[in-house]
Amino acid sequence: MSTDAEQTPAAPPSPDSPPAAKPRESAEPVRPVRPRADAEPPRPAGPAGASHTAVREAGSAAADASVRPKRPEPAAEPPPPAAESTGTAPSSPSPATPSPEAKPPPRPYAPPVPAGPPKPVGAPLHMASVLPSDIPRPEPEPPAERRTVARTVAAAVALVTGVGLVVGAATGSLLSDGPSAQARPGAYEVARGLWHATPVDTLFPPRLEGDGAGPGGADRVWVRVAVAPPADCKSGLDAALARELRRVGCEKLLRATYTDATRSSVTTVGMVFTAAGSSKMGRFEDRFEERELAARTDMLPRAYGTETGPAAGFGAGQRATWTVRVLSDAPVVLYAVTGFADGRAVTEPQPANEAVHPDATTAPAQAGLGHDAEGIADRVERGLRKTSAKATESPR
Image (cartoon, rainbow, N blue to C red; front, top):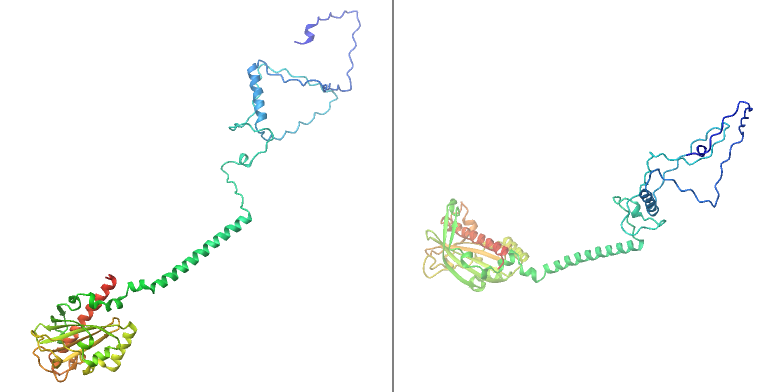
């Protein structure tokens, strides 16, 4: 309620009184009254009808806002342009009386307070509290000294690994030439010891099949009738052949005698195991071929006969044809010598490679003795190679 309403209304003027003079409008604007420096600032008036609880909540919210980190405030809008001077003095601002229907001012937004004691106002902010959690944070680069040490260690590890590989390769190379290599011999070395490690039935099977091995491609079958005990070259061979075999070192002589299905021929097959290496055996083979030692009658192998049976009386005078083979891939000299089973003497023996010729007219050739010598020698040689290969795969 205004003060004018509280005063007593004035009496109307009388008709006899002169009219009252109108007040002059002041040309100068009225200056606003400045508040005193020591005066207490006016407190903001709350909305009409606001309760004490709302006032306390507004105060606590203001306190929380002062503790929490301040968010950047939007730039202040420029003030509206000043009104043009109309010659009238602006009235002094008076506190507007809030309307009962006015709503309370909205509470300022404040982010959620993290757990733990509140940080003091003005505390420095860390990057972890500013950057979002899904943005990868760059890791600090290690100092130059640490990078240098890491590179040195990596180079040293690579050097040690390389040296280890080289030393391992060298050690393996040395071991391959040492006792371990001798413990795993090849086919050549295995064949050298077959004479005492292989059953006689393997070296000299009791029955040999000679499909197409006879004259004109006829089939042949040979049956073993005698096996000689191991001997040396001096006692089991003639002097000329024994002397020649000393070049390669005669270690052991094995022999067996076969007869054909008709019991018309007998053949002694023998294997001489030598002490020579592969290169020396190769040169010995070349010597036999160049000098045609296998065709010389003084190189005839000795026959092995029995006292009874088809091989009875088979001796030096019954030798009709023969063959001698030097095996360069094994330390073995293999031979076969054939004669008649009836003890017939032969004055002119003929090498087997000549007796198998279709145009040969000698008695041994006509009887097919050359085919017996070549056929039996072929099959015993094949069995020896097969046994040697099997022994190499599964050394005993």
